[in-house]
Amino acid sequence: MAEMRQETDYVKHHIQKVVAFFMSMRNFAEALEKADHQVIYFKISDKENLHNLEKIISKVISDNKIEKFEYQLPDEFRLDEQLKSICKNLKVESETFDTEHFYTSRNELKDFLKVKSCF
Image (cartoon, rainbow, N blue to C red; front, side, top):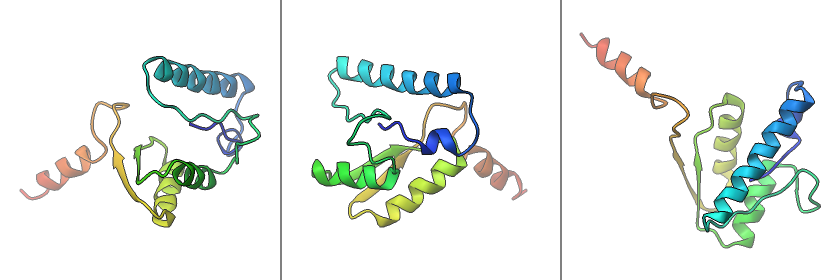
């Protein structure tokens, strides 16, 4: 997980929103660690934080000899496109997983409309 300037700078955000978002990320990382999950976390002020998602992902994969990159589908188009592009350049396999952020899956409506249009 990484706190990055790209998440604070792509549009103007109120400072309280940015702080709340990063604090939520830190709390989530801490909860995962308490549940015995391995977490790699870069705070916005960490010297090791490259502030570039592709560079961070590539470095973590390389440093940890990761053989497959998996991630949850983001709910934001900008980040979705960025991750698709990054995966094309990775030297390891990648796979996405749907999230539970929404009541329906990402393709459920599209698939439903496809079926309905056949009648």
